[in-house]
Every structure is written in structure tokens, then in C-alpha cells.
Amino acid sequence: MQKNYRSGRLGEEIRKIISNMMLRGDLKDPDISPITSVTAVDVTSDGSYATVYLSIMGTDEEKKATVAALKRAAGFIRNNIGKAVKIRHVPELTFKIDTTLEYGMHISKLIDDLNKDAKKSGDDANEE
Image 1 (tube, rainbow, N blue to C red):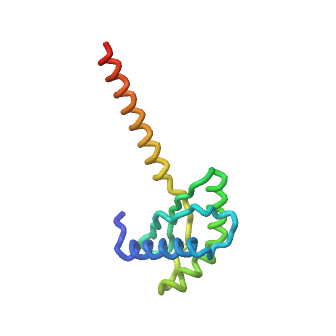
Image 2: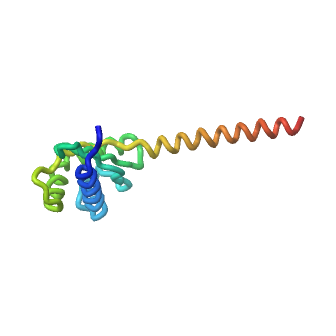
Image 3: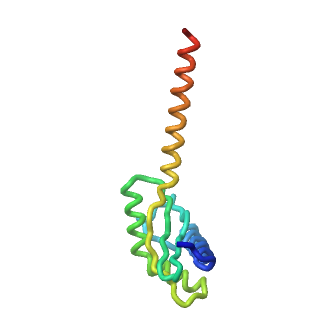
């Protein structure tokens, strides 16, 4: 389904607002990891739901605790979004962990391993 221009702009504005809230320390929950960033926000075409993708550095327990803390603070976050953006209905927020960074690092490691194996087999062929 094609995403319309308005939902894209709204998602970007929500991303900025949540990122600024984290940066300023408005979210005072100790369970929120200090190394958390909002990578993207997808808003449905009707604007009723928004999925917030988070990049969180830390252990799996820290990641789960951060997502749980943000779910608890969803009402407070929505209130701040409503004050900052003049829209009739602030979307319901759901938080998900963005795994693209870890996936990219995994793919990069696999490519490096392949390059090392190719270089090693090339060196073995030169010795013979």
C-alpha cells in the first residue's frame, strides 16, 4: 500500500519530537537506556497508529526494559506530540526495536570472513 505524503511528514515530525524528548531528558524513567535513538516512525495512512522504531545499544534485557518503559510513557509522549503538532487526533504509539543496524553488522562480518577466506586460499595457492 502506498504511503501518502501527509503520513510521511507526520512520522518525521513525531520522530523529531520523541528524539528531542530523549535528548532533553524529559523521559525520566531509569529503565530507558541512555543509548537509545529513534530511527523511524511509520504512520498509518489514516493517522490513527504510529510505529516507532528504536535503535538501542545494550543487552537484550536492557532493550526489553527500554521498550517497556516507553510503552508506559506512551501517554506522556502522545501528550507532548499533541502540544507540538496541531492535529485533531494524535496516533496511538507502538514501539519496536529496529534490528537493521545489527543485521548490517552481521552481513558486514560475513563479507569480511569471506574476504579473509578468499585471501587465505589465494595465499595458499601462491605458496604451492
